Image (tube, rainbow, N blue to C red; front, side):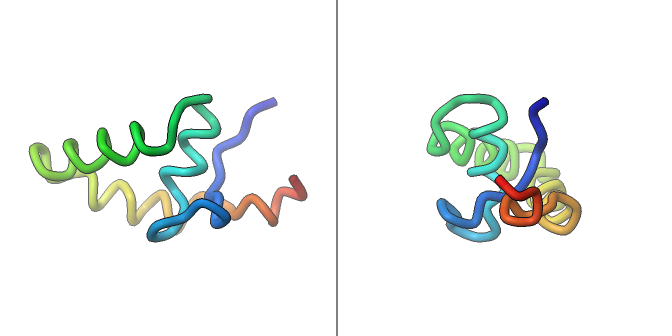
Length: 64
């Protein structure tokens, strides 16, 4: 079963995009670019990132 988490091994800020990219089985750079575009044009990306950084558990906490 797939779970969302922060992956601090590939982090730039908190590891949210790295964990999301692994969950979606896609490239982390693509996720970061999409997140940046959403943040710039819609303004909700930064708030969503902060919420995810606070809510998502670390990969190390899941024992993986």
